[in-house]
Every structure is written in structure tokens, then in C-alpha cells.
Amino acid sequence: MISEKYGIVPIKESNITKGFGENGHNAIDIGWNNPEYTYCEVWAWKSGVVVANDEEDDTGFYVDIEHYNADGTKQVSHYVHLKKPGGIVKVGQEVKQGDVIGYRGSTGHSTGPHLHFCISKPYTGAYNKQFVRDNYLDPTENIYWSPNKKYYWTGFGRGGNKIKNMPPEITPVQKDTNKEQIYIKIDSLNMRSGIGTTFSSYGYAPIGYYNVLKKAINVYTWYEIAENVWVAQTKLDYAPYESLEYYPISQEDIDKAKIIKELTAIQTDFNNKINNLLGDLR
Ligand SMILES: [Zn+2]
Image (cartoon, rainbow, N blue to C red):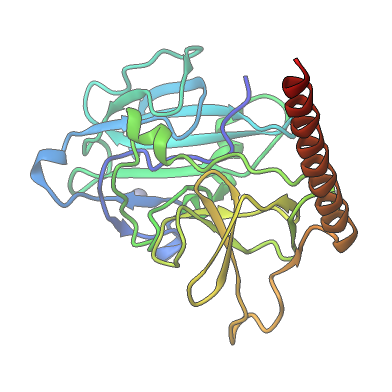
């Protein structure tokens, strides 16, 4: 089982009430805006296998899920202070991204309902509770957040919305002078769902060549590289370099296409005339 490239926020619309690294906090605390969400569902960050569903003094009820990265490494996601009686999944159970694994609560050392959530650094070998607890990453760097990164998101949880808003898998193509292409030169160019920086970002496009489906200009020149996935040629103060290069179809290819079109028209015209003459003779 291979995990998704991007994780999801494991709880519906919420704020981060305590950030990663704040006073040695090796996770994020996801609080709530709305009492209705207090004991809301907790969803699997990515697909994986449950490796722990237990209770401890500090954590209260918690669940660990192991995920399998495409490069062969593994990662654990860790969900803490779940509502009593704990996770609704069993150790060894496979879960899909967005599956309900438990409910947000306030068990263990907690002052109010919130989800203490983090992910481990990638590792190889067997799941080791202590290793993953000593080696956490900031999950906000590994989640597809809302466009403005304000630590909440809309329409990005379980159900249809999740699929609709998932970042598409974008992979570069071969260089092809018969096609209108761009070459993305930097690894931090946002892919957006529309023409404009207010459109939600899908994350960064991998460096490489892409076929241009459409072109549009507002403040920047935008290129559509997959359906509803746009990147812009930016030249900003903080990025004093060209983010991409544009390659129109070569002049030679344009000329060839023009000649073929002309020849086809002549041939069609000729065929029509011949048919008319034959028609007259009959
Ligand atoms: Zn916490």
C-alpha cells in the first residue's frame, strides 16, 4: 500500500491553537471554533495501517497510523487526546485517507478538547513507538492547507470535497518542439486552480517541461499545464529570476503545418472540381 503524496487536515474546520515547536511542543494542537465540532471526527491523514490504539497518562487515548511512502520509507501519524474510549480502529487495520479513526476529545494531560497531532520523520524498519516520538516533523509542512495557510480549510475533508480539492498528480513531460511547452525552473512555483493568486494553491510544480493547454494574461502570463491547474510566469522582488521559460511550437513546425493545410485545401478543391466535371459529363 502506497500513501497519498499529500496528507489532509485530520479534522474539519479548525484553528491551530498551539504551533509546532512552541515551548518544545513537537506537534500541533488543533482547537475548535464551533462547539458543534468539539467531539468531531478525526480522520486519517493518509492511507496506512493502524500500529497503535492505546491509552497513556500523558496522551490519553491515542492512535498511531503507519504510512508507506513511494520511496520505500515509512512515516507515522499520531493522534492524541481522543475521546474516551479511544480510537475506533484496530491495530493491523488498513485505513484509507479520510477514514474516521476516532473522535476529538480531552483525555490525558489536556485542558480542553483538542487534537494533538503530528507526523514522524520518515524511517525504514519496524514501527518503534519511541523512535517516532523522538523524531517528529511539523505536520503543517506536509498538509495541503487552505490557500491562505490560515490553519483552517474549507471543503477539504472527507467525502466528495476531498477528492475534488486534492492536488492533482502533476508530472513533467518530455521536451517536444512540436508542442507548445513551458519549462519550470524553480521548485517553488505554485500551481493554482485558476488564473490569479487568489485561487487555491495545489502546492509546487515539480521542475521540468509541461505541455501548455491554454494561455491567459492578467498581471502575469498564466499557463494551464493540466485541467484547471495553472502556473504563472512571475518576476517578483523576492524572486528576481524567471520562474519558467516558454517554448512556443518551433517556427519550422508552424511553417510545416501551414504548408500541409494549404496543400490539403488545394487537394480538396481539386477533388471537388473533378467531381463536378465528372458530374457534368454524366
Ligand atoms: Zn499538544
